[in-house]
Image 1 (tube, rainbow, N blue to C red):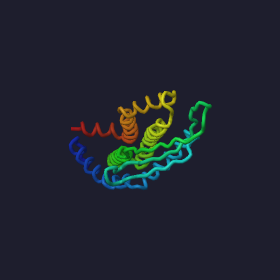
Image 2 (cartoon, rainbow, N blue to C red):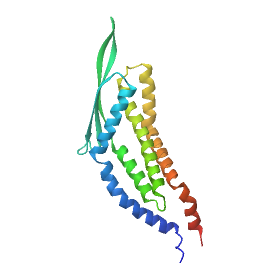
Image 3 (cartoon, rainbow, N blue to C red):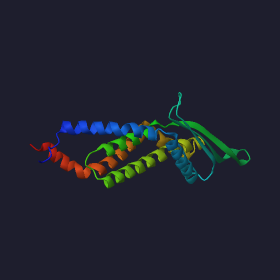
Image 4 (cartoon, rainbow, N blue to C red):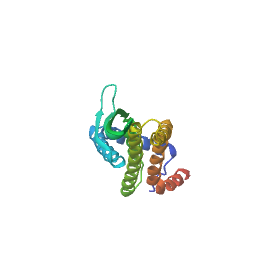
Length: 205
């Protein structure tokens, strides 16, 4: 007996149920301090790679209280300060915090959707998950590194102007757009082979 073709309503209900089943464990997985410690190690490496004058980097993850899901940072950067007698070497200390919610909710939703989508080969899912996480890490890294280092340049300098303008664009919605593009690329990579079959089944009499 041939399998009954999916209707849009039946497919949506099954997808929603599977999504909910995957969402809960993924929420605790990505909300875990271990995940943010791994991100902190990545950001520390990138800060030292982009700015050789970085002397020390420290990140602190807060998972409770008013600063819940915040990634605090303290970065010391060697700088030359203008003085009447020329330039004098010194250290600039950059301190602050970055909201970490965006760094774990987006992977949670993307992973849950990819894992919940029916009739996709395991290899395709794994490739889509790796693609999505890779693209998201690129977006997170660009934003965090720019967010921190832009505050360490002198007022009026070209570096401060360029980095400040770039950061303003990201904070005005650019980060969300880039994250959505990364999510869309991974999701479409996962379901592109199945989408045509799905449409045909839903249109079947």
